[in-house]
Length: 262
Image (cartoon, rainbow, N blue to C red; front, side, top):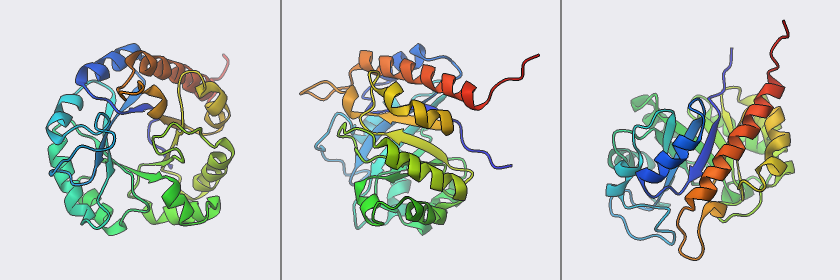
């Protein structure tokens, strides 16, 4: 029987292990927390990014990706356009430390052979395919064609994230996301769904309640959990988002899987 991976509440842009610990402690023990850090460009020859607080230098990653219980430590990797993706994934894997769990690949339609080789070598690592505007534009924002293209990654990808915001805090397009999920659900029975796009505690129920009632949903929030203008993770808002989202997902999980009445 086809099984989708466990749903999680996700936050991208952690800067310290203490921040992770604070959010993890605020959530119920049985809720998986995705701990996201960015990496843009070369995995080893690091240079400050336009968002340096969201993309820690490689030596800092093992200080953030810690062995907390029920966390998924994911590197949100935007590789160089002309790189050997497999080689750069290996380098990123090495610097991310011993408690690293996998990649979200923020590049349009990443090289399948590179991912296949990585999957062979690291069978338990998580691979998430990211559909940001550049990837969506390549196939005319057509949900059916998106699902058809994703079939290329069957057996390789664990999750797919539809993220038209790309970290800028722009609102989730609920209708478009739903149409994509409907097509993906038909073709890829083992892939998890991640929703993203301007999520925060104040809008997560409005944006996600319909989707979460119908699909086993994970979430990822970033842009609206930052301080302005210094762009640090606002831990209190991150906790509020995480606990609000967990409550919503539990309610919707109960709706999808009602327990028999004795």
